[in-house]
Length: 208
Image (cartoon, rainbow, N blue to C red; front, top):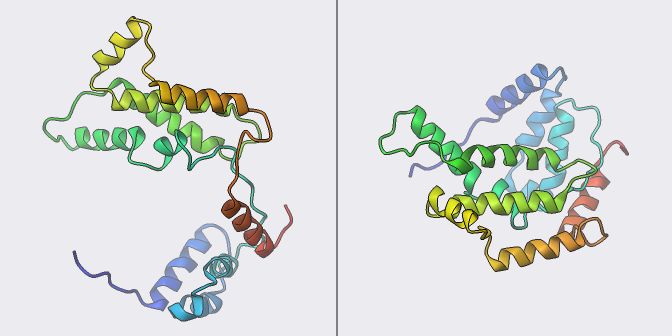
């Protein structure tokens, strides 16, 4: 693989200033140059603070406090839909292959539209005050199971005989999640997440 090539500070500053202008903001170009021109030793240990400095230099007048996610996006089954190389990712890859005329591409599979639609719903739900977490988890688990099944015929056969496409372990995990839904333990937050939010909130410029 080719070695990564660096970019000049002026080039990056001009690009960011242009983005700022397109957003209707007024960047402080000189401040951006100073921030971007720092070497690794100057930034090491204060990366988050440096990001806030860049945002302010771009002309954003206020930086609000963080808001917690309404879904445990990094936990299964949500992680399998939102981050990993799962059904939504594969559906996009399949669509690109068909559009490019790649030989051997399968026809649109039953789970593809459902995966893309559910992925959009999950991302849109991250900051909503009220979400049906247990229902979304079950939909995610079913979509992943359909994606991992050997064929659409296998799914149809299982459903025709009244069998769930979800394995017993998955069903048990979903039952536990449903039992916690709506309670204070429904969404467990790690110490790392709590500390990261507290640190970011301390750097915010506006209380809301």
